[in-house]
Length: 305
Length: 254
Image (cartoon, rainbow over all chains, first blue to last red; front, side, top):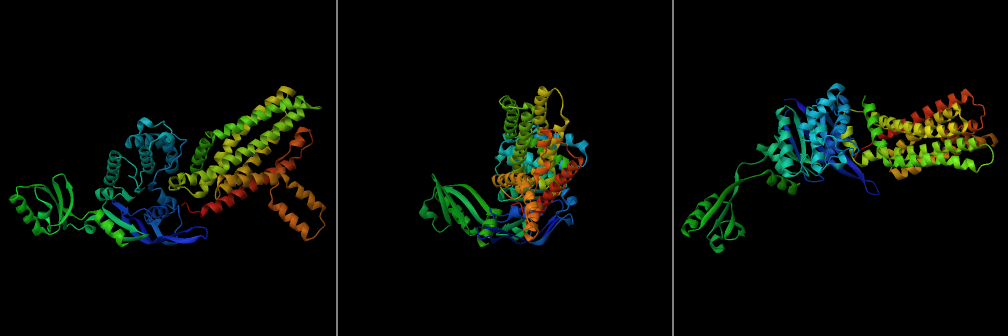
């Protein structure tokens, strides 16, 4: 597979404060996004995710490093013709209606004027905003703005879609719809670069992830490689045993009425607990083995980083 | 094509700005007010109407260019609309040029509206069309283009309030710099004269676009002056836009 996006040793700093001191934001980011994958760019707030995206789009000039889109310099209009971008908290022209807005952005990305009107309708349908085509954007809710932002990013049928926190601020239903659209893009053969701090989203849809902390990528690879499938511990919710009887089996977390949540780390103790529950005529309500999640990995990395 | 799209969007944006209509209202009110001023004037009343009318068009036109122009680029950066826009396959100079042309179109339409009110008022008094007035309006438009480019230049790196102060100073200094020209003629040859000449070259001379006196008093106007003023306006505007582009070209959008 060919590299759609290639970043090598990217450095960027900003001058801040009265004395204009240099603050390093990116400290040598290198990554490669392959064709047809959903690449998750994961990091806590202030890690440098948006700065990386702005460097890719030519909104910021890196001090050092190289960025290539489809093997072309990232700022070349030919490369930009093949990308779509959804900014974080989409800010768009409030004076325009949804269809005027899409038409304007279409004029900037499409070469053929004839296709404009039909493409506007198609995209409004895709993001479920057909009814609101003639409503000014200033009257749009956050979720609606996110959708129209998505629509503008897809106008030119891009090969690479760059999304900055695309699911932030959406309700659960809206997030599901957006996730569905992202997965559909992948099925259509498009490449998606998705920056987010919402781990659940990344875990559900991304093929590969990079974890960025303090302007440096501290780990990257496929989710399968990064997350161990070994059972870390088993969560048992049981009742009928006293706290004293459960001592030494594992961490007791909470009491839910009669119920106790027990975190057991050693496998051999599980059988012992089950025998004890049977003996005391207690009850096991649930028994869930927990493998490592992206969240565990992420928290561990951020704390180390 | 892309420049036109940006220009038309800017036109739509500015034409939907309510402050513009407030200024237009005051401009129209001042032009009509000249009729009442004429009533209490001794002498040629039409001259008063022409003088006050042209001055109002020039002043309110400049205010419109400054108020809207200083917000144009700044608003895009401040409201972050520029992020999605510059991610499209456009060059930064196309963005600036589109913004300039969009506002120029808005100003042209507003200028035509103000001129229409003014010309109708003059026609009601003289029952004839004074074509010289159109020449004065044409030069006012050139002046407005130059002021727009200056407002956009400041808007590239400064807040609207500061940019408005800078642009207004440019307008005022530009209309007073003819004094420097008079001074040069009176200074003895030497370094002080060279300094004054350099200063005069750097400071804009907006009086090159002012033919109110000639038009109102029916004084002769040379075509050479027109040609020079047009060239001066076009080149000065292009010069300012080039500086704006050079600043904008390497700007980081944080």
